[in-house]
Image (cartoon, helix red, strand yellow):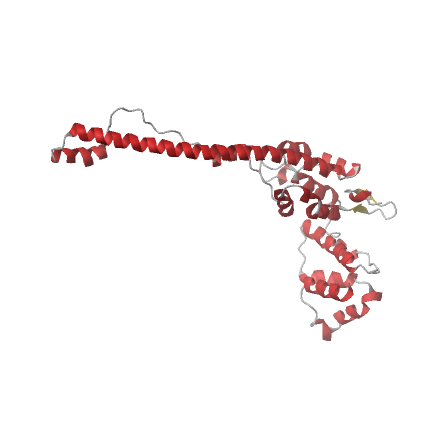
Length: 297
């Protein structure tokens, strides 16, 4: 029973092993389910990067300019202007009062022009703020819907594990990170659910002697679906890399070859082990995978 694709976490009664469809479930969200929402959310989920754009950031990016002073009724020169202009006036015997009035009119017109420019810029900034605030509200509403749908897309057991999950404060890098589901709801931190799912479903009981889980992968009798076997194998690789295991290309190739079914890929495995032909094999796991898919799919 696969629970209609919902995220599950259970213990197999026969083997005592933990079973979960976390990787398939997360892949279905990245590739299908999130696409019903705006593109930005698909990008956030694919990259694992939060968009923490807030109202304060919107206002900071769209500063409203104050009007400049135009209330003076006469021109008062600065010390520099007095030296450069009025001293020249006296040298040329130009009427100081008339020149002062002319300079005042120039000053006032420049200020009026500047206020008109600032008013136009402020109108543009206000329109942009209104649109971004509206978008921010719509984003919040959308995030609430997404979080609700993600939690509904789980079995009761999985949802309870995530609701109880608490981030270790020692692992929190900054104050922007959520530490539990309730805080994530308040912040609109919808990616927290996926992070909590990985922690509660993938890492349970992971120890140094069990990280290479895919080494013991069950050998299927490739019944016309070699691609499916490849996908399962790569899920195990992703599990190891997610919990911090560094896998070399050589290690991936060795485990891949060891997990091939002997009765179907006997010749391939024999050639791989033969010293005279091993050097002719592709040097990366990706190359081997593509060759095998082309030959056996």
